[in-house]
Each structure stands twice: as structure tokens, then as C-alpha cells.
Amino acid sequence: MRFVDDEGRARAERARAVALFRYGLIREAADPGLSTKQRGRAVRALAAAEHTDAFGARVRISRETLDRWIRAWRAGGFDALMPTPRRLAPRTPAHMLEMAAALKRENPARTAAQVAAVLAAHAGWAPNERTLQRHFARLGLTGSPGATPKVFGRFEADAANELWTGDALHGPTVAGRKTYLFAFIDDHSRAIVGHRWGHSEDTVRLEAALRAALAARGVPKAIYVDNGSAFVDAALLRTCAVLGIRLIHSKPGQPAGRGKIERFFRTVRDQFLVELATPGAAPVTDLAELNRLFTSWLAGVYHRREHSETGQPPLARFLAAGPPVLPDPGLLREAFLWSERRTVTKTATVSLHGNTYQVDPALIGRRVECVFDPFDLTDIDIRYDGRPFGTAVPHRIARHVHHKARPETPAPPPAATGIDYLRLVDAEQTAAAVDGLRLRYADLTGDNQTPGQLSIHDATCEENQ
Image 1 (cartoon, rainbow, N blue to C red):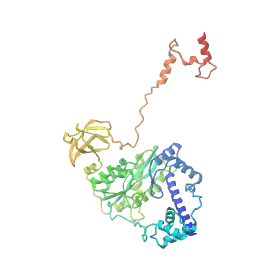
Image 2 (cartoon, rainbow, N blue to C red):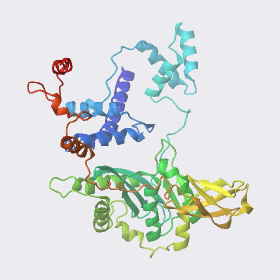
Image 3 (tube, rainbow, N blue to C red):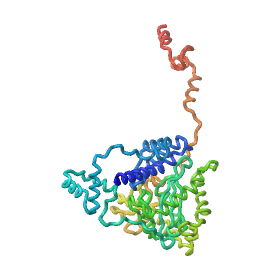
Image 4 (cartoon, helix red, strand yellow):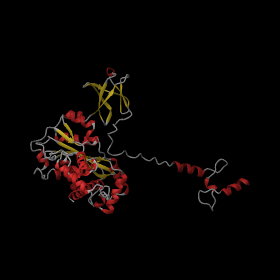
């Protein structure tokens, strides 16, 4: 029957889509070249992040599930990642489903409830409404009558710096830690205007990539990003507001418009990351080397090679209309300051991230704006109603750097003192004479005993004597 064939094909396509999602997620963690510890770190990082599944939903995958997928892929390859098909026999008679589909096609305005009512009047029984809804969805009979599917046309900005698209790519493990690439692509030229590899997928690393892009390539009219935590942070909103950039977020589950940056990331995987993983290639030891190699690849390969869509090298197309107008350095610095609002206490102080600052007494009881560099919390500018009110005087400083401004590399371990306290105590006790107050443990063990075991019999005999 035709509807059975259609349903089988639809299920097969869904299963393949799910398997592709699972494979893409575990591909790097399942690399046979990783050690057990490296694989554990990779799986924990995947479990801690949020992902977009095969059907556009944002999901989190537990570590146990990821481990199970890796084992399945190793044992049975790609096919083992497909979800197990249901073995239950359909409970609704096939002829009833065919008649329901015929009624729906006859009049697409009929709802599932109305089709059920017609079937009940005609045959004396009908499947429930939810069963009919699922059946219509499998056959593509849902949606408004006469409505045409939404078509996403091919879009390209008319000029350079009209639209940038930003996104993040999960990269390789460097120095034992996962890496992430933040990149911005110019929609018109396909030039990569800014990029940065970092160990965190956060606002600080995002702003590092964007600030370099603005300083070198000018200010775009709009930036298009997704809804990741780094892209919805208040710091990015303030940056765009100060520079007059329109910040656009894609609708959740509808990533249309980010195809160019996704295509670039595929090029990164196929042409850059694959070379890092080639046997015999010198391993990348730190982020500085990774960023240097990536910058060289961009300048020497990607930006010089003719793009398949535009027919021009990306950088040449970006500069075709002349060098871009660069922003004023002072304005650029202002754009990347962070801002938070606080209410001034009766003692003319404000608290910010565990620190206390003295401000102008005229601001007591008012809600002021604290503007600061996240890497230096000792210098806070106070503003009220858009007007500057001087610099806050540090009163008690417990934190010098914002908690989001984590360093790329952890602090080195403290230097060893070379003092072995327990060995010192042991040496002292060994050298001491045995007297009524001191007793060496070695004297309590006999030759025929297990080392460290006290003979209760010997001790009892000594007490009796």
C-alpha cells in the first residue's frame, strides 16, 4: 500500500538524519588516537554543551548516552547509530487510515477531529484524533489549505561590510583542552573579517575576535548570529549599540541565513583541521601556535583562492571598492567596555562583583551605570542619566578581574618547597633514643610477623613479666 511505503521512507529518512547527527557529535571523541583521559574530557565537554539535533531542536546529551553511541559506532559503524525501528504492529486498520487520508485530500480544510467524526458516522468507528494527526503529518497533508512551502532564496549582500555573520566552531584538543573558533564572515565577499581560537566558548573570546575584525575591516551595518549564550550576552549588545551596528538573531530552530559561515566551517574542517590531524604532522602545543597557523592558512590559501560562488578571491572582492573606513580607537575602546547598573547606598558606595567603591555623595539612592574593563575592576567609571560622574574610588577590592574574563591558560602550579614533613618526623623518631615516653614502632614487630603487624601475644607476655 502506498501510505505504508511513504511511511517507511519517511522513517528511514528520519533514522538516517538522527544517525548523521549522532555521528557528527561523537566523531572527534571517538577518534582511536585519543587516550582514555582525552576521550573522557571530550565526552564531558559534549555533555556540558547544548546542541542542535537533526530536527532543529536544542538538546543536551548525557555522558552515558554519548558513551553508548561511541561503543555502538565502534561495533557496527554508521548503521549502528540509527535508532532501532519499532517492532509493534499497527493497531489501526490500514483501510481506515486510507479512508481518512482520502477524506483529508478531498477537503484539505478538514481537521483531524472532523475526519474522525465523518469516519465514525460512516463506519461506526474511527481512530482517535492524535492518530489521524500523526498519519496526516507522515503523508504531508498538514498545513493550511493552499499554502505553499516556505522557500529560502539565495541571498547575498550588495556590498562589503553590509552584513557579517558570526558563529562558533568546535575544534581540536590543544594542550589537553578543547578549543573553539569564533569567526565572522562578510556576506558579500565571503572574506573572514575576524577570527580567534580559544579554550572557551564565551563572550570574552567572542569579543576578542570581533574587536580585531572591527579594528582591521571597519564597522558593518549589521551582524547576524544565533542564540548561543555568547551571542546574547549584554556585552555584545552594548558593543553593537555604541557602534551603531544592528544585531540580528536567527529564530530558534530556523538557522536560515547562516549557510555561508557553516560552509566556511566545513572548509576549515576539510582543509585546515584535517592537516593538523595528519600522522607525522608536528603537534600544535598551544593556542598561540594554533592561531598563527590558522591566520597563515587564511591569508595564504582561503583569501587568495577563487570562491566557487563569487568567482573572485574573498579578500580581493572585499577590497574591490577600496579600503574600509576604520572606527575611531577611542570609540572602539568604549564599545568594548562592560556596563552594569547598581543603586548607590546611603554611605555613597556601590558593590560590584564582590568589590566596594566610593562614589559621589550626590548619587545616594540613585541607580547609576558602572562602566568598566572586565580585565581591570579597579577602574570604574560612574555615569548617571547619560552623564559622567567621575571615577569610583576603590574601597575594598576582593576581585581584580571579572569572573567571565578567565585566562586562556591556567595558572602554573606553585613551586615545590622541597620539604617532606613526614620524612622529617620519621627521621627524628628514628634517631631518638627509646625511653619510657618514646617507643619506636619497629621495636614492636617480631622477625616472624608481617611488617607493620603487632604481636599481641608478645605484648601480653611482656606485661605479665
